[in-house]
Length: 67
Image 1 (spheres, rainbow, N blue to C red):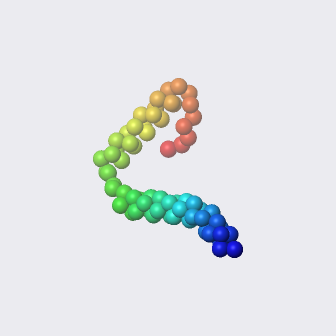
Image 2 (cartoon, helix red, strand yellow):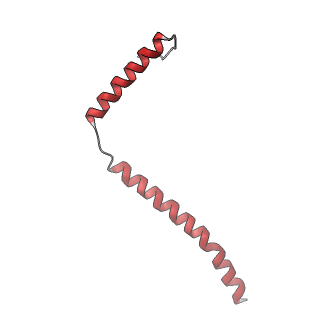
Image 3 (cartoon, rainbow, N blue to C red):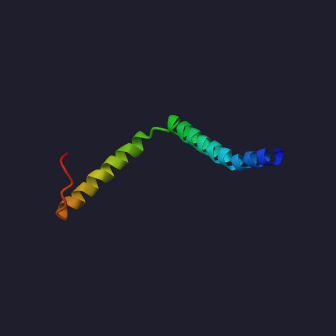
């Protein structure tokens, strides 16, 4: 009977490992989002790139939606 309990516990170890790894990953993503740097210069460059892309697509007849 002791062998049976040992086998069940060994089977559960990989499951606990995967769950623990997933929790750690979610924690790291959360910490990264909380400390995400704001880059005002990059935001302006991105807005300029978006405007250029919209103009490029409009010239080719693609409807890019309203402003």
